[in-house]
Amino acid sequence: MKSIILFLLVLISFSSCKKSESELDSEVLAIAMPAKKGNVDQVQFVKPVIANAEEVTEEPPINSSQKEQKIIKEANLRFETTDLNSTYNQILKNTTESGASIQNDTEGKDYGSIFRRLIIRVPSHNFDVFLKNISKGISYFDNKEISAQDVTTEYIDIDARLKTKKVLENRYIELLKKATKVSEMLEVEAQLSAIREEIEAKQGQLNYLQDRVSLSTVTIEFYKPVAPDSGIAVSYGMKTWNAVESGFNSFSSFFISLISVWPFLLILGALFYFVKKRFKKKTV
Image (cartoon, rainbow, N blue to C red; front, side, top):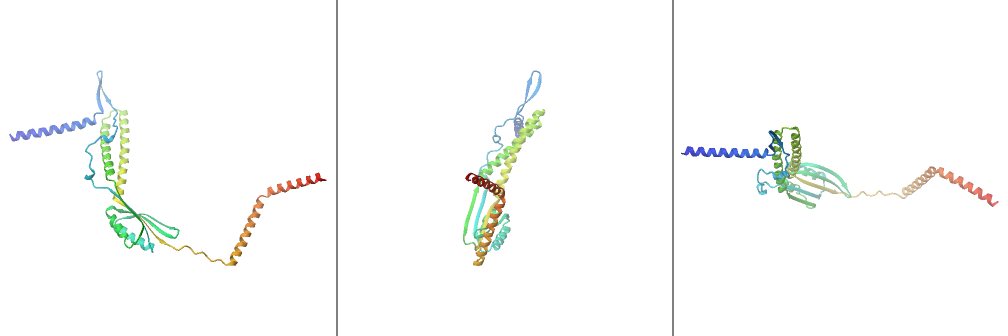
């Protein structure tokens, strides 16, 4: 009796599995439908149309509480130091110990100070420890900004859409295998190309978020005040000589300007001569 019951259970399980597989195949092949025209069987290839790929769901949405939180951490620090090299070496030491890396290193000079600006990518799990270590010995920060942005929902949404696009891609691939005409193949390949572009875009967004989450960004600017350049005392004789030299340069410039306009001066001189000569004839 037990053997008969066991046999019936196995038979029912096998039938349900076969039914599920046939239902899945019917979804993929629903686009290609047989049609009869007279006595000739023809295959009518209907263009696959899916308004929104997101409507194709293989599994229920995942609650954000079921996923690890995705937090983007950033910090912006600015402080004064008495020794730029010593401060840089200390930051470099902490960077190495934390498994971080310097992404950008800039040096410059502002009015009244020289500075150095570092952009450091720190593994997120060492973010707090890194900030604590580089803050040792600093009594005052001119600027200290620390932010944490939760992108868990955005990450899950993009990941779910990416999985949906991949499911849709597989369906188009199966449909392409069953296409028999060149026009049908080209039609499916066009749809498949568009889906793959969307997959690449979603994958790029996901990789960008993951990079921002796994590596925090810390911008550190430290500076050292410097005294303004003192003016050089100039003697009275030097001032007199500078004035004479400046006057000579001005005269030279004026003379060169006159030379450059000599044609106009010549024309004006000739015109003045003829006017004066004619005026004398009238007075005689």
